Image 1 (tube, rainbow, N blue to C red):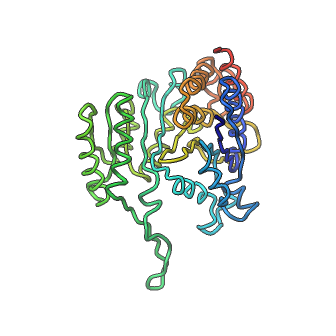
Image 2: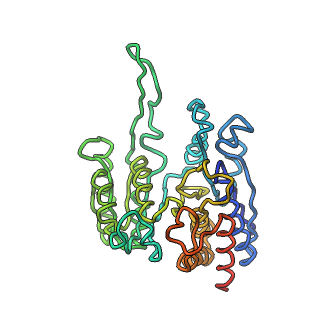
Image 3: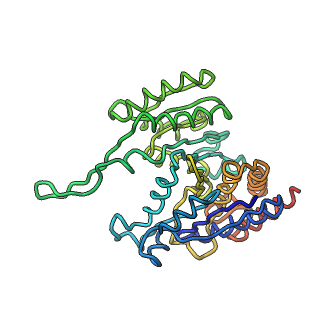
Length: 359
């Protein structure tokens, strides 16, 4: 049966890294006789420039009907002065909400060949292999009321951090289930000493933990977690947290690897899954064929694993990435720690050649 993957290259380097990912998808489709069909649509600033909206209803419909969505990156200074409802990032938020993508998985693994690439000492990052499970459709990013109003003659900005028990329950379940396939430890991150929503979060996560007696649960305040990620990142297995905390902590964790260009992500829910690198659109290097496509290619591995249910193809990608890095190849963002620096397209070709050699 044919599978459909919607490609949303977005803005800046998104176009370049998704192009390399598409090559990987096409090769695996042919190699495993999977009949994967891809179709490309505009999102973010590219959609604003053409259609005057961050994402069209027709594109949302195509994503709903697809087996998976691969997103490059959206946004850039060009659109910074657009009104809030026409910012490129609205495309991403709408996709998450309308596809019901409440579970964001961000794996962070430090390759042994890149221990020296981290800004931290090699002995601190050695062995780091953690998973951030971030709630994706609640909290400050979606809570109401929200907006800028005028009170007593001055502007006031309001954002609401709101969580229901059911929202916390479903993301907690996802984290505990993920931990069962790893090292059986969940660190739930909150700000329960201050925030009412975090107090409910901690109470609910503790109750869900009772269903998983084989999993060790610890609670950690978000400020302490930020410190511990720098002091002793190897202590973590699964980090469970709400939307904004997860956004910040996962970007911090990405730098353990030496570059945010190395970190993939999967956004899952009840329907179509969406996959994307954690990095942004990097307009300063767009069009130069120097962006690192590995986070996007690694996101394709997650796409095959979670949406296409093809573990062998996912493993092929991850094995190829590891072999290429261990052989001393990388892109400009990791050039100080690479024997050979490849362009965006050269890296895509190197991953393809390495996968082919595995067979």
